[in-house]
Amino acid sequence: LQVSHIDCPPFMDQRPGTSGLRKKVTRFAEPHYLAMFVQAIFDGVGDLKGSTIALGGDGRYFNREASAIILRMAAAHGIAKVVVGKGGILSTPAVSNIIRQRQLKGGIVLSASHNPGGPDGDFGIKYNVANGGPAPESVTEAIFALSQRLSGYDILDAQAGTIDLDKIGTQRLGALTVEVIDPVADYAALMEKLFDFARMRSWIKQNGVLFDAMHAVTGPYAEEIFIKRLGAPAGSIMNFVPKPDFGNHHPDPNPAHAEALMAAMWASDAPALGAASDGDGDRNMIVGPKLAVTPSDSLAVLAANAKLIPGYAKGISGVARSMPTSRAADVVAAELGIESFETPTGWKFFGNLLDAGRVTLCGEESYGTGSDHVREKDGLWAVLFWLDLLAATGETVPAILDAHWRRFGRHYYSRHDYEAVDSAKANDIMNGLRQRLQDLKGRGGIELADDFRYQDPIDNSISEKQGVRLVFGNGGRLVLRLSGTGTEGATLRLYIERFEPRTGNLQLDAQVALADLIAQAEDIIGIKRLSGRAQPDVVT
Ligand code: VG1
Ligand code: CO
Image 1: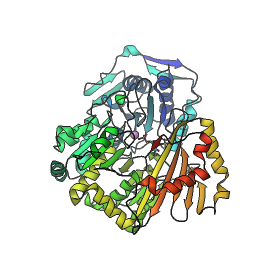
Image 2: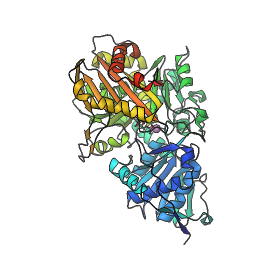
Image 3: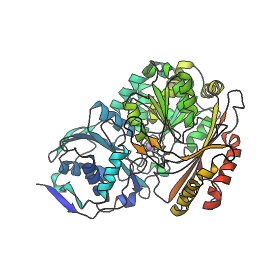
Image 4: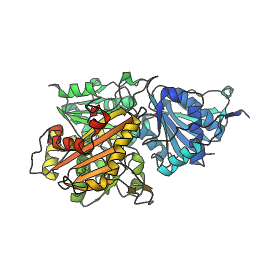
């Protein structure tokens, strides 16, 4: 009727990476590029006709244009209803929650997460399935395969009308129902079920909190939760007005990119807790006065103390971490007598374990932490967990970490990123190391040298070549992998870890504690030598 079929040859570069398809905005804005990928999603997922899905994004540049195209394509595809956040905005964990609470078929998230935005920045799109989590590899591979042989896409003609994304309520677009919802309400209600808001409210009054939304999607969520529901003073949130270009920053919550927050937390009048989240609200950084918590430690601390939090008072069933994440959580799991799992990088690998009830908490070294309350990592959730933990114990962030290390020992940890390396060079470095794995075993204290292979314990699916691990007899570890979220050249990530027993020196600076291993990594792998880079671009 009002549907057009647009003929278009396939784009050959639409393979989803660690977390959906990410490209420069300029690529996404090329005629038909986004639409062809959306068609691949609709066909690749299969049975979307007559179903309801969610749609939301982190508000970055091109978010609204993309939303409008997707709605017209949803109408053309015969999708019955789309639940979309006001203004096209929904954080990644909020999408996950909406899919679960409303029992939707799935959802589309428009985000390139921690990557910079704006007309010259990045855009991204990813599909989440009915459990609320990122599509598993079987689905993303099916989408990719389709994207390579599509000959066009279906879209409702523009004359059929438009949706006012700023008007809450139900509207029609052809045969499609579009429900525009408040992006924050359901999510905030979920947080109230998990944490003791009364206790946190009085703690904030005494100790103060500072949350940096980095001009990204968590601004409105933080305003509702910290200011309105927890009574924090107005100055407790910063950069909380979302901007399409994130104020020209990387919306990446780490000490290198959240500079303003770090400065505030190093000042003499710093509040007791500082925190930040990323573009789409699934990452978190926890900071105490003059101290940033390593994400791997954060996961271990949350696991060790979960029983103090109302939502986890019954205890946790198990913990999962991505392979490059430090083994601090494993030590806690062993002590608690619960299972621990090591998965490839990317939240999609936690979904089956969470669904099966085998794990309650999951985490990644890349400032990602989450639980079975949704099927994505969740930035604000992690901040509230720490806040509630501080309120429950009356302790400070440094005291909690100190006590943790004294009980379990400390996993000194750092990640060195070499960004936008020439792809051929980066592949040579990776493959050169892979070829030497057999030789490396048994040399220089290396006990295990392999390319991580994961077999999912629930559906037995296998994922290979997930990163090289060199494990030393003394508990040290070097990991090298290529990023799957970049949009320029290749990014090499080197992860360095060393275990210090509880009786050892627990108060060193991580770079100092790891200096020998870092030098050994250069001897063995030679990233600097082979890439010609003098230093990593980002050290976390
Ligand atoms: C990075 C992180 C990974 C994370 C992924 C998505 O992937 O290392 O742990 O799951 O980003 O996070 P990669 O392949 O670049 O190392 V987000 O918040 O950017 O969606
Ligand atoms: Co993110």
